[in-house]
Image 1 (spheres, rainbow, N blue to C red):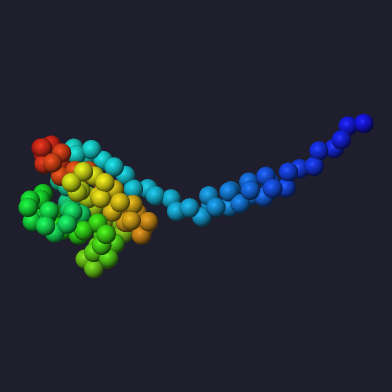
Image 2 (image 1 turned 180 degrees about the vertical axis):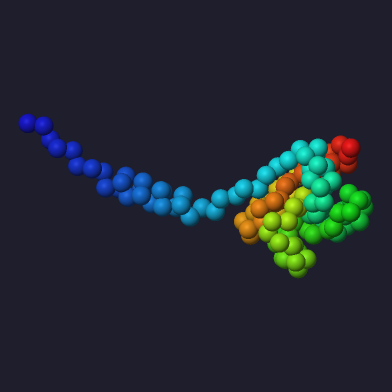
Length: 127
């Protein structure tokens, strides 16, 4: 006679728990763009935000950019009165901090943000 296999209750519970957690993980729609795509957005009146430190910004930045350090990005754009559908291009030295800022804005409900990456690549690709 064959034994009837009992379902593994620990495995079933673990599967349910993992599935439930995935439902609560915030989704990010932040996007990286090429420097040329960033310039297209900038030429269409996107707000350009340099998320580097004030000292880095003062050493040189994209003309017309404003400075909001990445750790203050959500508070900074809120203080400016930006709407969640305003076009925003972010950059820093390498793209890492602007990526973090882009994710923070996306999670705060901003839908038209873009990480343009590093300032040098952006400057070199200006049309």
